[in-house]
Image (cartoon, rainbow, N blue to C red; front, side, top):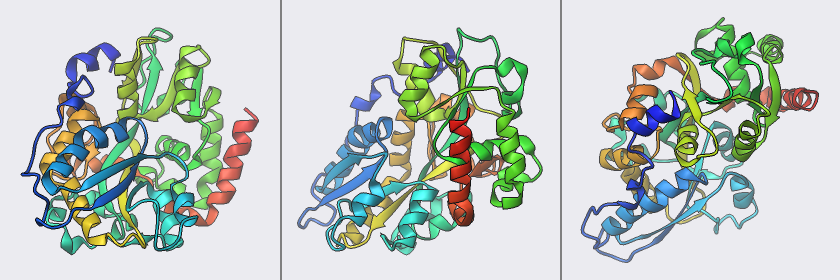
Length: 358
C-alpha cells in the first residue's frame, strides 16, 4: 500500500478527531456525585484519540472527569513507587509484558467481566490469552513493513521477503527481542502462529534467521525509525501498521509505504484496574463504556487499529489491511510474554549483544 493509496482510501486522521460528537445527557451515570478517573494510555496518536474522541463522550454521558495520561515508559515504576492506597493511575494500558510484570507484583485489581454488559461482544480470539483473565482487551495492532517508496522499487509481501537481496538496508527495532523473534518464527514456519518463540530450544534457529536479514541499522523508538528512513540509513523497516499509517499521513518529508504481510504478528492493548485506587466500580463502568460498539467504532475511525468488539465498524483502510473478524485473527500470532518469562532476561541480553555487534 502506498502513501497515495491510503491517503485516498482512509478518512482516519484527516481532521475528524476534532468532531468528537455528543452522546448522553451529561447528567452523570447515576445522577450522584461525579468522579475524576485517571487513565494511562500510550502516548502519541493513541493518547490523542482518547483526548479528542473518548474523553468528551465519556464526560458528557457520565459527568465524570477523564484525565488522560500518555505514557510509553515508566507505567509500572510509577505505580510501584506510589503508596499502595494512592496510585498515580486508576486504569492503565499494557501489553502482555507490562501486564505480566504488574500482575506478578500484585498491581492490578482483576476486571470483573460479570459487571461488563458489553463483554459478550468481545472477539473470543482476544479472550484466549491469560492476560484477559485479569485485564480487558480493548484494541489490537499488527506488525507491518514500512518503507521509503522513493528509495526502493521493492514491495514486500511476506516476512520471508525481508531476507531477500531486494530487501537490502533493513532497519529493525533495537528494543524488545520477542517482537523481532516472532517475525523470525513466522519466517521459519515450523509451527503455527510463531509458536517457536515459546520453545527455548528454537532460539538458535530464530536468532540465525535474524542474523541472515540484511540489517543496516537497528532503530530506537519511533522517531529513530523515521530519522533512519529519512536520512537514507535504511530503506525498509519493521513497525506497527496503525502508527506507520498515521506517520505517513502526517509527513511530507518522504513517501512512506506500508505493507501488511499475509501472515503476521501483533499485540493486544489490555486495560487493567490499578490496585488501591478505590475506584474499581467506576473503572469497570469506564471499561464497559470503552468497549461499546459505538465507542469502538469512533475509536477505529480515527486510528487504524483492530478493536475488541465484534460489532465495530471500520474505515476502508483498516478493513483492507487489518484482520478484523474473529476468523481472520486466527492468522495473527499475538505476543504472550507469560510463556517466555522464564528465559526472557537471557534472550534480551542475547538480542542486545546482537544489536551492539551489528
